[in-house]
Amino acid sequence: MIVDKIKKRKSSLKSNTSNVDIPIGKWIKCENCKEILYKDDIRKNLSICPNCGHYFRMHINKRLELIIDEGTYKKFDINIDTTNPLGLEDYPKKLKILREKTKIQEAVSCGVGKINGEDVVICVMDSGFLMGSMGAVVGEKITYAIENAIKLKLPLIIFSVSGGARMQEGIISLMQMAKTTAALTKLDEVGLLYISVLTDPTYGGVTASFASLGDIILAEPHVMIGFAGQRVIKETIGEELPEGFQTAEFLLEHGFIDKIVERRDLKETLYRLIQLHK
Image 1: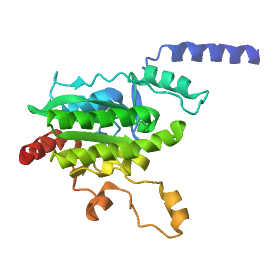
Image 2: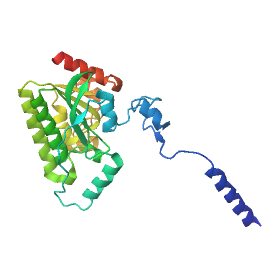
Image 3: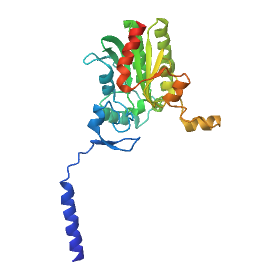
Image 4: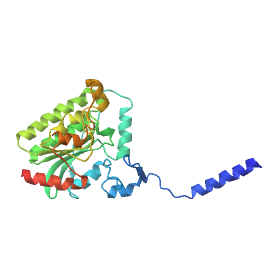
């Protein structure tokens, strides 16, 4: 009798919960305030938590919508694909899964567009694709964009977000640091403007190359910026590190970046800088 009652209770619970309409994948937890938020509300608020102001990372397409005038972005048609120089079995599989999930082909998109009517060459990185790591294709696309900025005589803007060089491509990924840096030297020689915008996080070989070489370096609030992680640095130098030494606020105070800009003000700030340079 008791067993029968338990079975009836379980079946009634199942039928009740099945009628509850809770959409799957419609909610997200804020890392800062721990509130459960409706994703559509986050998207409408420029991927900023309406409760505490925490900045969520942005997809390439959302970033371009925020910065570039509608209908003006034209991606560079550069037909190159990621190779597997180390012959890793899982690397091609991981790339395929990521492309299906993120709807992008690589960790960066480069092209031309307009900011309030001003023509620019722009590159936007995406943390959702192998943490924005810089492999051969990412390095080549950014270099190609720099060369086109020189050819078209346009200002260059790069939005960086990265964990660093792509370890799956070994030394070839490290070579991209030198290649992008050399291309930026040519851009500087012809007197064209390069604005580097750092978003969370910007680390490793990206920080050690093109992200740090802007004529003007901007950052979003509370961005983490550095070459290596805090634990690695501490173990390497054997000293206590200042509180928050890798935050945008600390680096602004010590002269590494020029200005911290709220996300909603980025487009207008970039436009004004382009106007001033002209």
